[in-house]
Image (cartoon, rainbow, N blue to C red; front, side, top):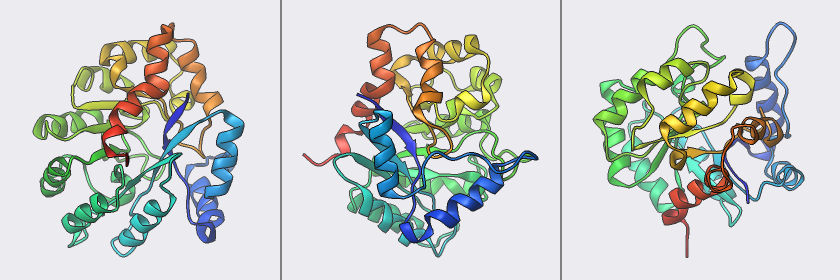
Length: 273
């Protein structure tokens, strides 16, 4: 089994335009960033079949206050036996705490926060009430962590800042995307490894971490029971991201834990029986 813990998709009416916009943001002087699905629900499921991915966790981001409710309604609409779904709240929304209650009532599996697109630093004091509420509701939270092409000179979720959050809110289960911090892997080793309330996902690691020895150090230093296979689809795909895992010298039991076992354990309490 394979469970991809970090997948993005969008309403059909917005998918093409959204993918084009994000590809421009993530691109460079050589052109737009490549993408591996069309961003729709149907297109994503079809590619999952091709890639041999059994289930996925779709990550949805409230990039503005006025879009927050619609984002969560869409997340609930795609949730199925095959797809888990994380909702989102915007830190500036006056009803953010009430929306967390609604996320729980909708049966969503957690909350995605993207500090760059939502314009906050993860360890700001104003986030405390949101973190406390998520911990109270037993909502998992996945943070975009580390560098992002949207604001390449200003990192809103450096590993050290995430470590402060993990220490301040020990009852909140944190998933730090991009192996704890995209392009910040030395900081990950210094500040995040071994923290019991922190999981790391592997999304987009293949594109930015070219030191396979460091990849193995992070996995083993943190604990293979708290690492989640992920791609950040449509911006990467399983073939690219599994290459590092396939060459990490894991036992079959360890490999299975990372590619699906840890995800099943983490998410099982939120699934309908």
